[in-house]
Length: 259
Image 1 (tube, one colour):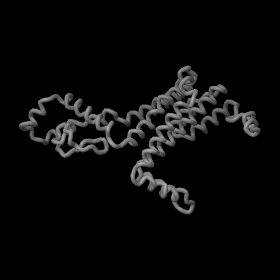
Image 2 (tube, rainbow, N blue to C red; image 1 turned 180 degrees about the vertical axis):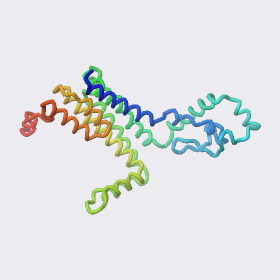
Image 3 (cartoon, rainbow, N blue to C red; image 1 turned 180 degrees about the horizontal axis):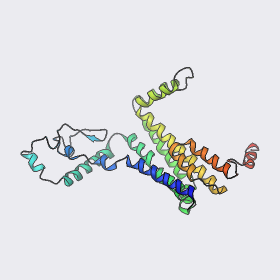
Image 4 (tube, rainbow, N blue to C red; image 1 turned 90 degrees about the vertical axis):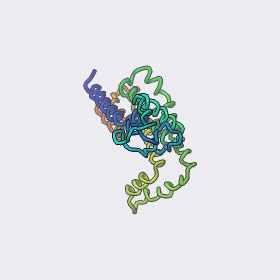
């Protein structure tokens, strides 16, 4: 294994550890023991469900007196109670009226295995078979379209469009205007996030294919295309220059000019 390849793989593993370590899927569906001891416990069918968390009108386990029915309740093992509440929360999550929340997660994690293939195994037949076509980018486009279509059907859907004028007002403050939209419109954030991730994947795939066609080392460029987008393309340009190859061959430019 060459040194650049090893460095790229180490960077990738670091990114995976940071990205996935910050997301606790177990924590999303398993409340703490203090929540299990709540009088408005998750397995009561009338408990409200907001932001994927059960109502918490309760005190912690060590503060609540254990008497009567509560003593029978506490006779169960914590593992049993957690398993029951986890099932309840998973069911509520799946049936909650927040499809955009779920689509946001899909848009975030769906592309990641395919990035791994292009970075770690760029010449593998499996990678070529899966990423050689546009099926995966188009699937990401469908997720983005779902977020847009669902957002349109909700109250106040057109409000971000009205404020978009402030973002493109050269006499104003575009950055603050955009930050205001991010703070006030969660659906707009979901749309922009899936938008960015989809185009990152599209460009990363182009870099990977260009590397295969012209035998250019693309792992760092594809990695950074995933991490921070445009710098990945700049790294590919630098790699091409170091390799003595243009990022866009003159013959290709001539073909386009003659179209």
